[in-house]
Length: 332
Image (cartoon, rainbow, N blue to C red):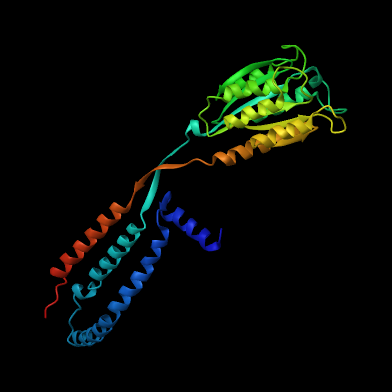
């Protein structure tokens, strides 16, 4: 933002808080019009100034006081200046926002698919928590950031299970994740089946952004649905799939090629994490990216201030005419 724009914004916030203009460039007409008016009145005022000065000398010489009408003869012209300025500002259509709304069906619906296979009980390195404990901590913290969005959770091993349908109850989702332990399902890694279960939750979602975040530490070795079949289904439904490989980088346990292909086919992204901090960054990046896709909340209803300015301008012009016809009336 330039210095001029910053100063203008600061001035508007101080003088007219919450007011915006539909056509702000038209405000440039205000100083231009006032300069033209001053130039128009400049010559008559100079001529009148000489006469007034001479008359003032005569009045003072005669010991007479200058009348209040003569002292205030500038008032009608000032009223006209202000009225014209108000009319020009009204043309720029000043508006004040009355309501800022967030439409849930245009937000984010996100399903988190977590691999619960036996290998998730292992650690990625000495001194690090198990992959499952690290994933549960990161997911709980991530869910806490999804205010206003719906989130669901599914787990998968050889089969899949819905832990939570899409909901805005973040606390309930966090509790469901916290209580998850291996052994609820037959062991295995059914990546394609887990992805398909998540897509089933998102199938009828009216949200603008529909997202599946799939975390795994292995390769698909169970289930009737292959991972790339699930990615084609996601592409058909318009669901972006973000995949996270969570395992040591010096092993071939994670099928990174398949996870990259799923993400690229659906417009998502692949993240390779080997520590809890890298995993947290991956989820944070996903949340920030999806939030940027949806956009910020915005005013949806405005109060038009132009009619008030026009009414004030007409009132000032009426007062000017009345003053020129009565107290400040000129005689030939």
